Amino acid sequence: MAERHKLYEYDYGTRKIKLKNKVCPKCGRVMAFHRDSRPRWHCGHCGYVEYVEEGK
Ligand SMILES: [Zn+2]
Image 1 (cartoon, rainbow, N blue to C red):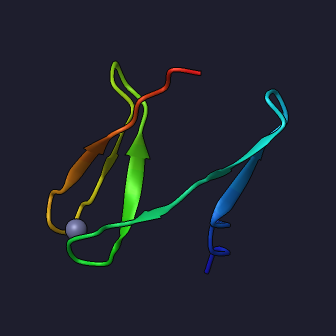
Image 2 (cartoon, rainbow, N blue to C red):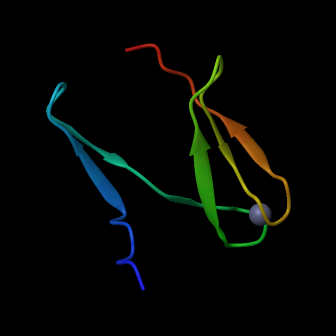
């Protein structure tokens, strides 16, 4: 099996450590990050969506 993804991701461009996987507040599953027109976290289990504001 493949290794588990790390929970944190280091961005060499901005030199910041950011959370890679977020846990769903509703069901506690790991959410997936989608970066389309609007970056958002999506839970594939219950369908919960949390939009991310990227102002900086
Ligand atoms: Zn969920």
